Amino acid sequence: GAGVSQSPSNKVTEKGKDVELRCDPISGHTALYWYRQSLGQGLEFLIYFQGNSAPDKSGLPSDRFSAERTGGSVSTLTIQRTQQEDSAVYLCASSRLLAGGPYEQYFGPGTRLTVT
Amino acid sequence: LAKTTQPISMDSYEGQEVNITCSHNNIATNDYITWYQQFPSQGPRFIIQGYKTKVTNEVASLFIPADRKSSTLSLPRVSLSDTAVYYCLVGDMDSNYQLIWGAGTKLIIKP
Image 1 (cartoon, each protein chain N blue to C red):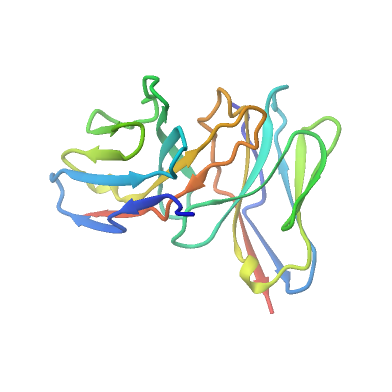
Image 2: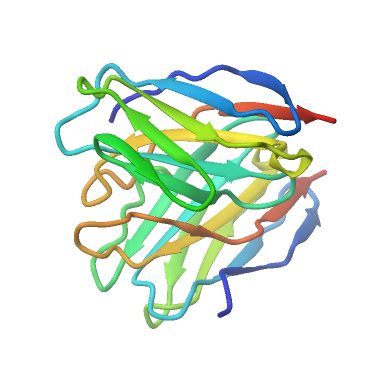
């Protein structure tokens, strides 16, 4: 079946502009995660959505970052007034969270954001 | 959240068995151990997950000693396509979905 998709695959923007990154999770997956990965580094947790619960935004680095998930499916990560340090690959993942596991996250291909 | 320590890089040759060990001294009772693989320009992919003893699937084995303070991912008969970064993660996915991702182990397989 279809996996997690993200768009755009690449985004180049000028410092100070706003950007929107989109994630389409696997159908039926109730949990959705956003991560950020800088070159040669591990993943940095940003935000987590689970069903209708309030999202856990504790990983968002600043108030310039926000995310929403509409209808329990598609999610959009918005970065306002982009800065050069925002340049990274933004990864989205989804999972089913079956009781007893396995606790497996399915990742999309990522969006490479470059702020010039 | 338990922090993990794994080698930064490893080299091996095609056809060999590769073992990557991860230390997680502060693992909690409810924590699972999960390994992911990541190729360049792709998102990570789940390899294997375990709680204790040994787990085996079609691509790897995971060995976990009784004290659970470490784990070893074993890749049998590696090929060039196994060149990737491998991440060891520890956490209770029910409540600790904010897994800490280290820099992982960059595995390079040579012909």
